[in-house]
Length: 211
Image (tube, helix red, strand yellow):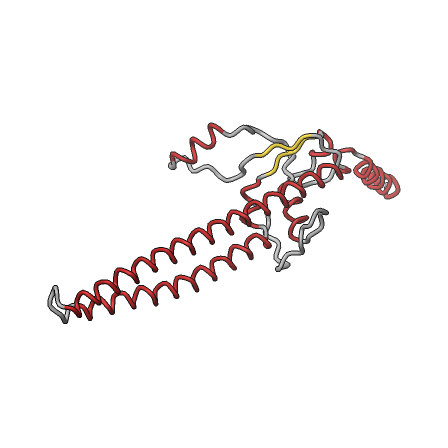
């Protein structure tokens, strides 16, 4: 009886190891290579790509510093305006301060506009370079795993109370996918700098988990 029970356990164990279902890898991208097709959430990758986040934080810090300088210039204009109130309208002192205030305001507007354009251009370059890196990583992953087609989709949860979310759900091109989401794998590849084509190592080793 004991021998028969042991034989049954061993047989069941061997069957589980040889079963195709057991051999199939688990995870959101488990079927991508099997079907030769995958989906990727580019927006999610942008939000969790450490190199991109670091670059945007750097721009934010620089912008805050520039805003501090502009505040100093703005305070100088306001100080001149307060000083102008001490003089009668039309007096030489009033006219002199009025001209100086006009000049300072013009210089301030030019400086603020130049700084704003500079940051917008730099931000656009960060987005463009990141997009190239993401595209390159997706292509590299697809080639390594024999995937012939990768579609973009959005994996965010839909809030039925938000009109924008509902419209996005209605218009999304991918209605259903069966474990072909390669987003976590591509994100991990990017964050460890493992894809060719100039993807620099990430500044942080933190790896957000795909929800």
